[in-house]
Amino acid sequence: MIYRPIGNTGMSASIIGLGTEHLDNRPYEVCEEVIDAALEQGINIFDVFMPGTEVRNNISKALKGRRDKVLIQGHIGSVDIREQYDRTRDVPTCRKYFENLLRSFKTDYIDLGMMFFIDTEEDFKGVFETEYISYVQKLKEEGKIRAIGASSHNPEMAARIVETGTIELLMFSTNLAYDMVHTDIYDPGTINDNLNNLAFKGIDPKRDYLYKLCDSKGVAITTMKTLGAGKLLSSDFSPFSQPLTVGQCIHYALTRPAVVSTLIGCQTREEVLEAVNYLNLTDEEKDYSQAIKNHRGTLDSKCMYCNHCLPCPSQINIASITRLLDIAALDENNIPSKIKKEYSLSPHKASECIACGQCEARCPFNVKIIENMEEAARLFE
Image 1 (spheres, rainbow, N blue to C red):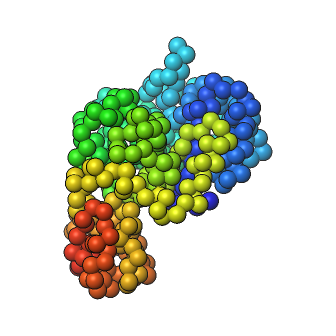
Image 2 (image 1 turned 90 degrees about the horizontal axis):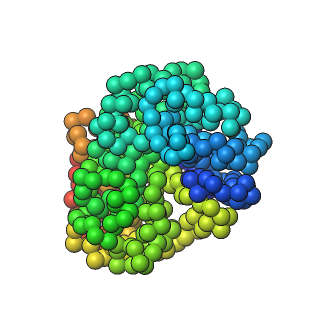
Image 3 (image 1 turned 45 degrees about the horizontal axis):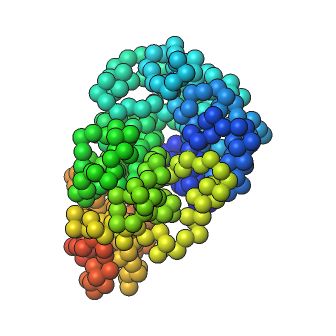
């Protein structure tokens, strides 16, 4: 397994994580099978957004004696009043469900305390203009959560959350189809139901900005909807020229700036193993560029960090340098120190580019790589 640091929290997450929603309303034996498989494969981050007591108890039971092996990403404000999933910012209700989460896991802390589902202006105000935010901050002060996070499907709202400086982790819906949809409607159900009918116009600048903003601020991202609710894997529902594989979906998400872990919903041991098999794939098997070739014209000149430009005769990590350049371009006069430091640690700098053009000939998206290397050398060196 590979692990990535979760921003500045001091914690690190496996790049393949477990979304546990498919364990809800399932027998304990299923839960135990999936949890055991995940731990055997080195998965160390579980997202538990479901508010029901039974599923929480089942996960806890399956983890018995191994709680210290796992980072629990728990959600504050996820409730099942009237036995239906809902969200609330009412502090007494949030406290009731959060304390239930602690009891279920027989613990006195949750690693990642996520402010649940902030997609609209109403959601934002309900979090940041009420006692809810004070309650969450108090939980961290008391050590009941180790880090504050938030979940959102809306890139504009997610960016506003990041810009408050409150969170250290964002859970965001990330996949190739979502990123290429330009729409003001970010309801995940609406997007999932209409993937074949949505217009693809290249990477949505709002989502592109969000990834770079998180990277520049040191806010890590864990991804949900990585497989597009399974529709990206289906020849009947994929919006691309061919369905993607699980490995291609995971690879796309992991190449987005700031992403540390893809949380894959699994309901069998086999599904866990299929997700973790990503670690054994060749570069060709991870390649998603052919699946979107019908949309290539909309992606011209935009780096997708896919590394198809390699190998470089000067051994420059072109995708990594370009990612740093894109983040620096957000504000050339105020480049984050962490971005400068990351560039300084690159073993081969942009100035080593010999302008041979081999990379541009290989690039599926017609990126002007030589110009980018010149610009990176100007900004960073």
